[in-house]
Image (cartoon, rainbow, N blue to C red; front, side):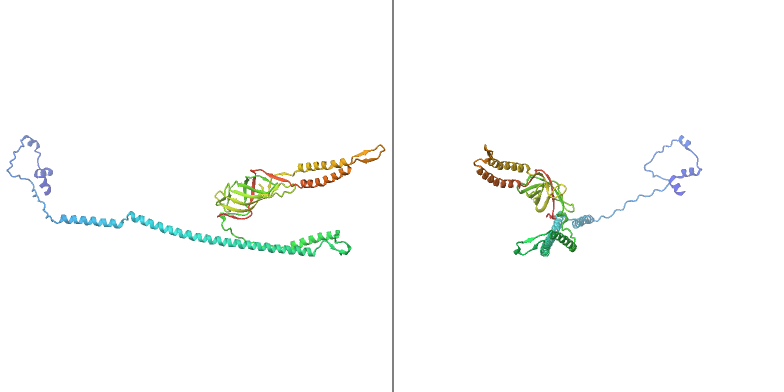
Length: 398
């Protein structure tokens, strides 16, 4: 209340308490203008606090220099921290170069070790292959010798002829009973040989490099680039149509366009329709060459390649007819007879000469006819014929 009295004044305080009167209307009638005298002191209803002067701080003349020095020290410390925490581009390049050099050296060491290991494995594989081949050759040799001994023993034990003293004028006689005995001996020998045959145990081996191997039994599709005529033996060439993959199917070892080189046999029997072909080399488009050692087959895999057969029947029969006519003509001329009036027959003069000419012509013609009749058939296979090649060995591409 005292504070309200000091601030609002006595009149307002009385009005707030309801004691004072409302003299607004009366006051409004009176001229309230009061002339102010500047020299008169102003009396207020409350005490006015005295104004306080701000304290004057004493200024240190070295404070500004100390602040500048501290700022410089902070800047130097910041630069030191940045210098220690950051790495220059030159240092980064040097680190990268050292890392690349270390990785390159490590890669070279690993590659060298792998190369040495591959060389060692290849040498071991070659030694194993040589040992296997020597063992197979030794086994074949022993088997051949055994067969020769068995054959010799058979010939010594079982003879199909009866030897008689030469003084009787007979060198040897073979009777029907001997033939039947021979047949029985052959049957008995077959049973004995079949019963005494033994089996061999084979041990499986893993392929050394399946991704670089074309295994035995693979069928290669190709087309002939050269025609075949069995009048004479010769060489042939073919081209692979479909790519040949490795055993595991990982890569193509003989792509399309691979050249095949081979030879064909001209030994053709009567009514034979197939030509026997041996393929001995393959050359890939990349320049790799490998020995095939394979045989030719048809589309169904049958041995040999079928062609157009010519038995030469027209040539043989034509020559036979011509030679027969030539040799018969002198004989006909030599046998001409002249009929006498008495009914007796006499040969025309010169008949003996005609007979000699006929004999000479027969002798010469028989030799020519034999040569023509012995002409073998011929088989022709046109260029572009589709063929197959049966691989007879494992082919390893490096």
